[in-house]
Image (cartoon, rainbow, N blue to C red; front, side):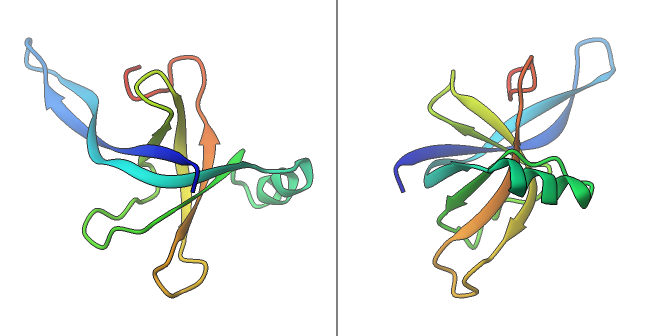
Length: 113
């Protein structure tokens, strides 16, 4: 595991004029992980199932703060790359690591935008 990730979960907060605004709350910090870009063949296979996935992120599981679909991962600090989790798999079924199939977010799709 050669990188660190931050896990963010979507929350809704009240704004100053009585409406609601979407915010992203940090749920878990400093997660050891490894990011792997999918090949064109792997992306096509996932796309044929209706899932837009660009990267696979391997990380250690946390039994209390488990990532789920629709959470976001940020790799490389506050100005790093943000990924939307599309699916979670416990590949080895032994709790050693989990695999998150993710889509890289661009153009304001990060946790701050």
